[in-house]
Structure formats: structure tokens, C-alpha cells
Amino acid sequence: MNIAIMSHDNRKDLMVQFCTAYAGILSQHNLYATNTTGHMVAEATGLSEATGLPVQLFLSHEHGGSQQIGARIAYNEFDLVLFFNDPSNEKMAGEISYISRLCDQNNVPFASNIATAEMLVLGLARG
Image 1: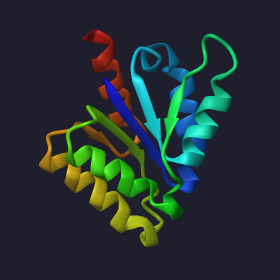
Image 2: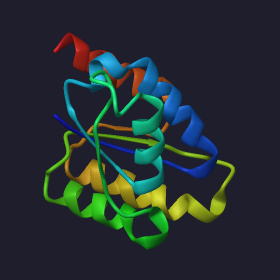
Image 3: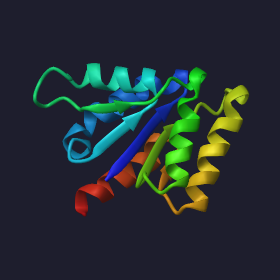
Image 4: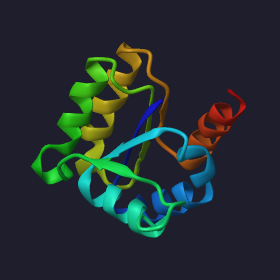
């Protein structure tokens, strides 16, 4: 499966912890991420080791990474999207709404918080 991972600045560490905790499951799938989030996840999970998570990177959010991921959602190239949202950051509310709406339009499972992400990833593990 192709899985997109994204996170707002205040949730990047949480995304890293999540990907580290579920590296065994996530390693069986193709991961794609916006630049900063992807680098952080790859480094934290030991990219240089055999057990590290390889992450294919898009541009950073500031340079259009969210739009790149959005376009791939629209073309049904992603099977799951994990986007850890910072609800206190109203400036970024449009971004989460954009990705969420695309996922709804294309029937792509979407998690905006760790609880929902855990349910989806555990579902992947069960097949």
C-alpha cells in the first residue's frame, strides 16, 4: 500500500514517535511524506540500517508538498493518509481541510490524530 504521512510543525515529533512505534507494520508498505516530516521519520527510524523506514519525499509544505500529495490522492495513488493536525493552528486549517476533502472524495482512509492512525495501521497489520 502507498501511505502518505504529513504533520504540522507542532505534531512532527508525534509523527516520528508513531512511525517508530509502528515501524514493523509501516516497513511493509511504501511511505511518502512532505520533506521535513519525511526526513525526521527516516532519521529517527535508522534509515542507514536495514530496519529503517525508507520514505519517498515530496517538497516541503512551504514549497507545495501538500499540493503534490493532494494531486496523488486525487489520482488514487494513495491508499492511506496520516496527517497529524495541530488544531490550535488556525492558519493551517485550510491545508487539513483540503487533504481531508480529497480523501473523502476518493474514499481514501484518513487519520488526523494518533488515535485514528493507530486504528488504521493496526487494521493494516490484520490484513
